[in-house]
Length: 298
Image (tube, rainbow, N blue to C red; front, side, top):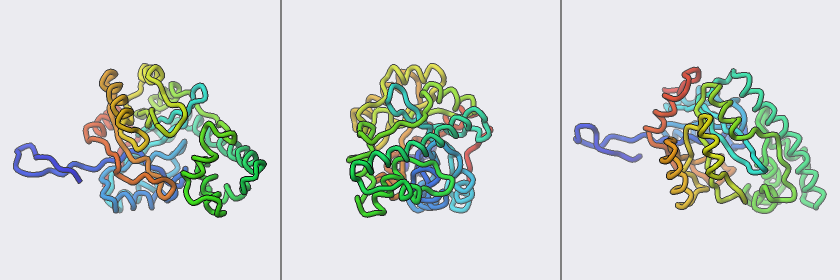
């Protein structure tokens, strides 16, 4: 844990380790919400954001684990968006879980994901890749948001590959012939929905190097015009050039800057706390929310 001098200059004051982007098996992580929070506590994380794809289904369990372990929990979601064939992810913090418009949009995305995976498996199997849809479904926890990582997990389980990254490198990327899109709102609309639900929208890793295309500044400006609050600059998929670009946009538009691990358990190489957020940014997120959903403190 990093430290700085306290207000009187008399000694070190611990600075909290804040990781605002992590996934449980309620979407495409490999750990339960309880397991995720427990791992965060063991890793020395003081504040954890649970941000499963298109669902708030892990919030209650994670909150119970957070109170038990002493971790401060920031309830959030990662909304899967798209524009002109480009996948854009939006983190929404402290949204109202009962907001009908946002929850309805997320439900449509989850339903579309299910049919999309089946179509991808059909394409892959037709090309001789040893995989069935039943094998994929066996990797999806009850009630979880299904996603491409579950296809990767099925390929791991049947011995075809050894790690999720192999599946994405070979077959699951957006430029793959097996890729099938799913319903996803326009990112501008997603910002509007998160704001209307009392939440705080932060664009996730917008310049990721692992995709063939990423967000552009014009889109970020459009999102800012309707309420985008922040940009996730510090992320494993951003190199120094991408971090600098994100920080420059944040300074120009007055956006808060976050950093996080995008942890998925054993599903990715990302480690809890490998990128973190400043306490001032967390304070800004809390103050910008409507207060309907609050940070869970021990």
